[in-house]
Length: 134
Length: 158
Image (cartoon, rainbow over all chains, first blue to last red; front, side):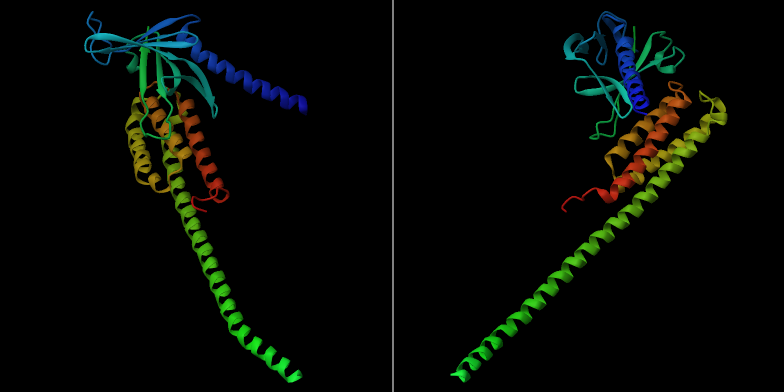
């Protein structure tokens, strides 16, 4: 009986760790990977709202466009899990990571497409979704 | 000599009797007030529980309606289901904005937001039926836990 309990516990822990690593591996590609917000202007001069995210194991470099120029910030990247869910956390928000098929309308035909959705923090009713491609 | 001590004890009893009467009345009144206060608190808690139960039943119905729209629990939404799905999602949103603020519970609120988001994602073809059903189940579990904790949780100000 005790062995079965330990086995179940280990299995749950394994699934949890695996899910966290999946989210991170998707974004980092087992190294460092730059993702662009889908719909970014492709012209040399950026426009407000454009952003890129470069994920690596421990940090994320966020480049945001402000006044036609890129502004870069570095955030600590941490995995999280709670209530059977998992994902990554940076910049004071927790995100769930989901790989999307290229056929999803939001992906606009991009084959490598992910969605980062903020987890509600109990303070606001709104959640935010960021659609990224590389 | 004996008469004097008898008189003195009579004087004492005369003085103590009204004091005891006043004390008795005060204790009785205090007990009555405290009992009434407890009763009214319990009554309020009971009515809140009933309201919560009704609200969660409404939420459960809205979730169930949304989940049965896709015929044969199809993994992805089909074109013929979108109209009915939108109508059910509207009803769920009405529930979210109209009923829940009255019986607000943070865990339920978070689960409702996540279900609402997932319904939108399913509608857009980003998530499949299993994800939607999982969020629906999480929401109903959150409602269940909220009802269970209603009586065990000490109320604010108690």
